[in-house]
Length: 154
Image (cartoon, rainbow, N blue to C red; front, side, top):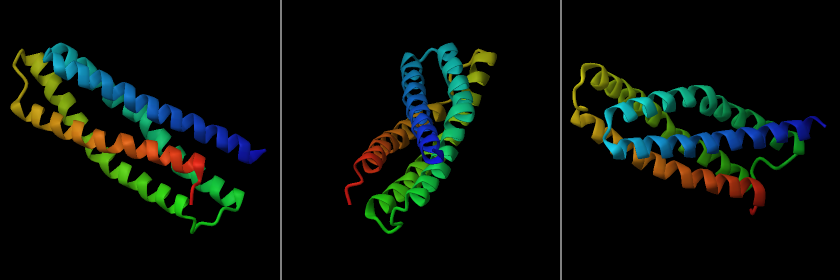
């Protein structure tokens, strides 16, 4: 019974993680394309908040619940699907951590520009390119992780 509860929590947290990520990425990407500082400030502010309230806890829950299920189910820790899943989890994290820092800086720049009625600093748009690049790397990796966890192919 504990296993099924943890599995449900694991699936729920992966849904929250992926959904929040795609939703946040969509709204911030669209807001940035408008070039409207008020829209950008609004979107970046709430994307940072969503990361703290939804993404961060889900990332932690994913690791803890996943390791618990592997242990409880008695899977072989040397199974390739487990190794790849864990490696890709950390690769995704290596993309996400800089994104968090970038988003915070972008939020601060957008809020300052809005408050001071100034255009966005050109650095904002350089950070936007990095934000898009890192996010574009992380999302397909998460899809591969989903496949590995469901298919357990190796």
